[in-house]
Figure 1 (cartoon, rainbow, N blue to C red):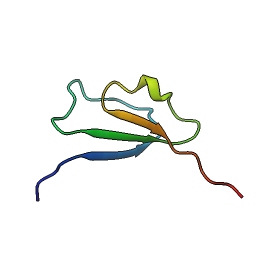
Figure 2 (tube, helix red, strand yellow):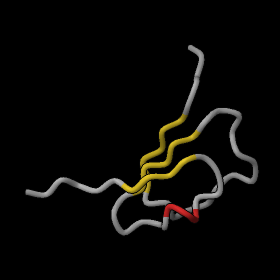
Figure 3 (tube, rainbow, N blue to C red):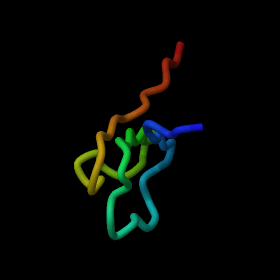
Figure 4 (tube, rainbow, N blue to C red):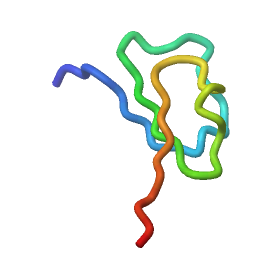
Length: 52
């Protein structure tokens, strides 16, 4: 299997690697998690639950 991307579901709190991986990374951050602008590499989006 060849990996082509990484999708990471997290609150954003924790340690990041010193070097970014060689593949694209999409960070999906939970509500109340780290600000998306604080993610050091890749693309980051906030997951907003659809509450009805």
